[in-house]
Length: 116
Image (tube, rainbow, N blue to C red; front, side, top):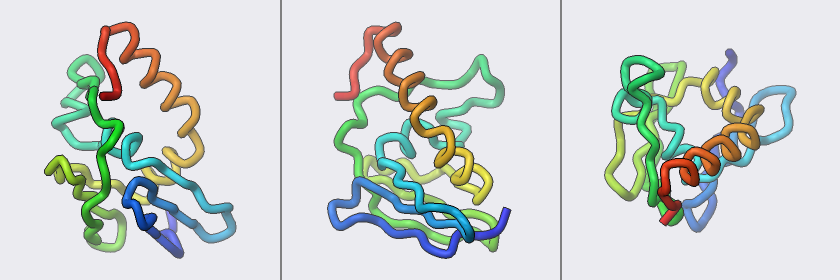
């Protein structure tokens, strides 16, 4: 996957806009990025170990750091900073954000959790 041509954090720090060459920009909420973080803390080491992360409605992006030429580390204001978001993963999130968001909301409801 080619690197994005632009990564832009909104002024309120709650949205990341990702633009890839020859694609429309994707707007990804900080909340979605946080609860779908590719970190082992969230994803575990297998699908059975994946953790549902509640209470992140008001999470914001503190900063973004480059990781080589293939990814960025997103640091959130709740101090979560271990997710390495590859270009492929950001591209996938952009294309699947509605499905992933709806699945997350259903999972919260099923587990009696809230967005906070």
